[in-house]
Structures are given as structure tokens and as C-alpha cells.
Length: 512
Image 1 (cartoon, rainbow, N blue to C red):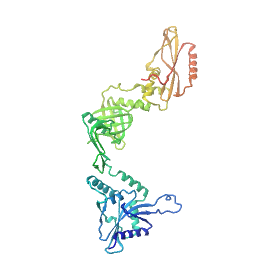
Image 2: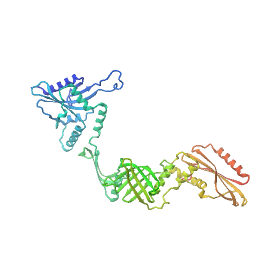
Image 3: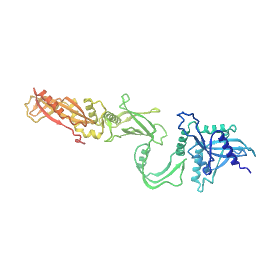
Image 4: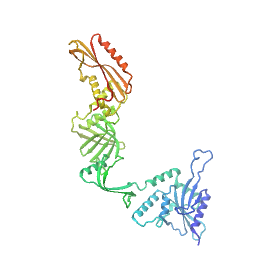
């Protein structure tokens, strides 16, 4: 009786040799393949583009038949070996007429992603559901189709069939297969977690986490199973009576911008944002939505809104942007505010009116606005990067400067420690500084007027000189004294001049 398998392998080897394909036989057939093929790259001497390209490699399992049978039972271990092989894999069927010495038909089946997915899922099902399942003693039938048949017996057609399945870029094929094997079956998640949540407050907190709001809830009866192809492992990898759960949503339902307007006709403040919907939402707009910007969040529940700042005391932010955020959050709390949600992909999603309950004067933080006013008066054009912590550590000094410069707080009364005749002309000179981010601002003020009592003068402060130094500069004291001396000489001819001294900020005082 002839050895059909040996005959088929020898004829396949001959076809490979005829086309320059190096067919390396498996000496011990335990890994599901008969030949490891190498197809050298065709290149010309001096061609730099192909100089470093490796030979195209693949593995082939040979099947032979003389009855035209196109279905064959193959061991799961054999199928698994080729499906998970890091290089291209094929089954080749050689069909012989009865007692014929030469092959009559050849079929080439590529172990592609569709084939591998179907097989790996089936193997996963059997491994989990059948206690005695053994890959090397269980088989699965595979069938060769007419589309996989060579038009005729030809070494050229055989090589073209193999290369056609692999594609033009062998290296990309290898990368895709590795990625496919890593991710296949995990499309619906890599684990299944079952928990019990007790209490309405905890249930609400859990729903908030599913909406994208950070938090944690106590849970009981925790069981977690590995999952692949939607099939759970028989034994949980986590089994706890109680614990705490946190859920983080990293992918928003939409990304785009939120536009906040005081009214429908007013200009808006625009912020980039991510939008999250309730995962159980059946309509749009959903009952619950969560809008997340870099600076604040908006939770929309039915007709109510909850706004929360994301700016911490140590968040670094430009002064202009901080004032924009504060103004927007102030408007969000006011009656009649308009909220527009705009998706980057779909355009405008929704426009809604907020029925605020707070008075317009409530909510804003004044100090950042005062600081921006001072930055403009001192002609600082660069963006000033600050933190709320650093800004409020210099609160008192910034307030003093603001009130001296802003005419809304004029006139002011200046006291001095020398007696002067009531009704006479007097001038008080003062130097006050403060820090705005990495800028050290210094103002020279003169309050000139008539003495109203023996030690007081009332007038409008005049900013006669302003300096802006880098925050780390500390060698300018002689320059300051020279400027002060100049102003004293200027006013001394017809005023009693009183110098209040240097009101100096050491960056460590006035913390709130």
C-alpha cells in the first residue's frame, strides 16, 4: 500500500524547488506543520531599498487524498499551532486520482484572521465547557473550497497563491497578526465583574461614576472572571466579600466645545470639552449629561445644573484665562444663561437655558480681576502664569495697589507723622510693590493736596512712576532711592513733602 502522505509531501517539495522556494521539512511533526518555507527577496545589486528586507517565511501543513475528499479532521493542537504562529500559515491539500503518481489538483487554505477567530473561539468554548477536553485528542473538520483551488498544477501559481495571501508588505503582515492575536476575543472586554451595591446613595454614586464623575463606592459580593469571546473562565480570579470600587471612563461620548453666554444675543465664552451621557440613555438629549472641561464641570440632570470648579489652589493658569473661567462660571449661575454644546464631528448638539438661582453679583472672585487690571496698568503684555495660592498670598498688597490706581476709590486720605499747618499744600510719597506670577511690579505714588488736619492730607493718588522687574531681581534698591529723591526735590519747592517709605512685599506675607 502506497504512502499517500509521503507522496504528497515529496511532490509539494518538488514544486517549491522548481520555483526557488526553500522548503525546510519538520524533522519531528509535533507543532502542526510539515514545511517551513523561505522565499528570498528578488533584488538587484546596489538596490538600497531592498537591501535589508528579509526573506518571506511561512509554515505549511500538507494533506493528501485520492478520493477527492475536501473535508479533513485536524487535531485542535495542530490548528492552534498554525493559528497562533507569528508568521503566515497555510494548509495545502494535494488531490490524487486513484493509483495516479502525479497530483491532479491543489488547494491552498490561508489560516487568516477569519479562520483563526472562528477556531480560537471554538477552542475557548470547549476548554471552558468540557472538563476532559484535550487539544491533541480532539479534532475539528476543515473544508477546502473551490476558491482555494489552483487553476492548474504549477509551481508559479502555487507561489503566487501564497504571496497573494501574504500581501505586498510582509513586515506589516507580521505586525498585524501579532496585534490580532493579542486583541482577538477581547472586543467586548477582558473581564466580567459582578458586584452588589446597597443603599440609594451608593447606587447614585455608582451611576455618577458611569457618567464620568470621579468617585468610589462600597460594594459587596465581588466576583471577577476572565472573559474572551464573551466566554467566562470557570474560576474567578477575584472573589471578595466586600471592597471599594472606582470606575474611570476614559472615552467620552463626544468631544467638542461648550459655549457659555449671558443671554442669547451676547458673546460667548468657549471652552474645549468632553461630553458623557448616561450609558443607559435611550434618547438625545439624555436625562443626565456630564460636561468636562479643563477648568470646570457641568452636571445636567433633567432641568437642573450643578457646576464645579476643577481649578485647585496649585493649578497653573494664565491670569487672562483664569478671569475668563471665573466669568463663565459666574454666568452659569445666573438666570437666563445660554449653554451651547457643539460636537467636533456632528456640529451643534443642543442649546439650553439655565434657570440660575444666584444673584449676578454673587460668585465672582474679585482678586484675579484686580490682578488683571494691574497687569494692564503696568503694561505687562506677556501671559502671566499664576496659581490661586500664589495670587492670594499677596492679596493685601494687590488690593492696596488696585485701590490707589483705580479712580473709583479716590480721593484718599494720607496720614503722616509730622505736623503741618492746616490748609497748606502737602505731598505724600509712597512706594508700593506686589508680585504677579514672575513679574515684580513697583508703583511710585504721590498724593498732593491741602492739609485737612495737622497730620492728614486728602487727594487723588497719582501714579508718577512704575517699574516691572523679574521676580528674582533684588539689586535695584539704589535705583528706587534715586527715583524717590527726584520726586522729593520736584515737590519740595511748594509742598511740604512726606515720604511714607517703601512698602515692600517679601513674597511670604499676607497668606490667606
